[in-house]
Image (cartoon, rainbow, N blue to C red):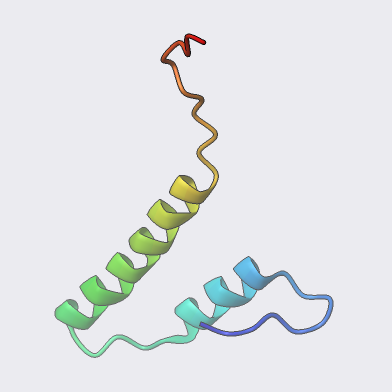
Length: 58
């Protein structure tokens, strides 16, 4: 992954880098897609604000 340049959006920079990759074969294309899915999943986990639904008794 690349570091964002000053004033540029890091997410868009990563998308551009992904689009600039030339896939060698279908397996390589699948690996690139899986990397994207993994980043998306990790981002969703990082932004999950689920609250604890159990009641705390003092």
